[in-house]
Amino acid sequence: MTTGRRRRVHDAHRHLGVLPAFPFYGGPPVNPDTTARATIAELRADLDREGTECALVIPNYGVPDPTASFALNELVVEAAQTDERIRAGLWTSPRPQDAVATEKALALAGERGVSALKLSFLLGGRVTDEACRPQLDAIFGAAREHGLVVHVHTSPGAASDIDEVAGLVEDYADDVAVHLVHMGGGMSGHIKLIGQRFFAWVAAGKRVYTDTSWAIGFAPRWFAAEIERHGIGHDRVLFASDQPWGDFAGEHARLAAATGDGELADLVFRRNFEQLHQLT
Image (cartoon, rainbow, N blue to C red; front, side):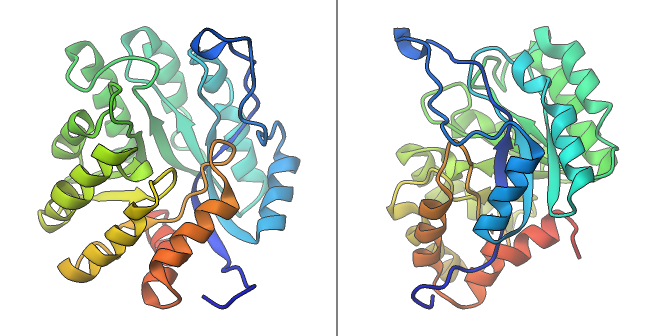
């Protein structure tokens, strides 16, 4: 990549909304997401400054109260209908206690500008819990009906470890695009995903995608090398900043270093997003 020139990009995963302070891990109430944006105007200013041409924007989350994130669904839809650079991802939940709120969220799935449904187990629930199955079926059913992508958080050591999330790929990714956020989420997730499962899923025809946000330093370079070795997967990896929990400049620099300045870079920074979110 040319020194001093930042490639214009599409951002496949970032957030909008300010969350209440929370006493994480027994400490005092804090807001660690210091670059969280409360308004559409602030988000648009960030896109202008970064040179981000299009972004998938999802309600902010992280505190163990999903009502805060559900309440932001209408804001991200408004953002998508205000600025053509923005696509909305709706917050949903697999937990049975959130079934009514998820049903309300899915009622927005057909709105103009909605491109994805966000799914995380970090606030509870498990892929293998039968009580979560009706919500999972509803979420993936809405995605299938409206041609949406399902974003799934991956985090080894939590209920959304790649071992469990793999079940969603097996069950739903034949006809629904499943975006595995954070490339497995950590050391074990990276090794399991890149070294075992991802390329097998692609070869089997699964509609599986991932991004490099939060990835440990070696992982994007290894993934790029494995794409070259396998000859597949180049169309399944995307750039994502995960703002405000990630760092745009850092995520951009790491992925640019891994992909260089050729066709693979053009795919992961722009063209894969355009294809997945039907911009072209």
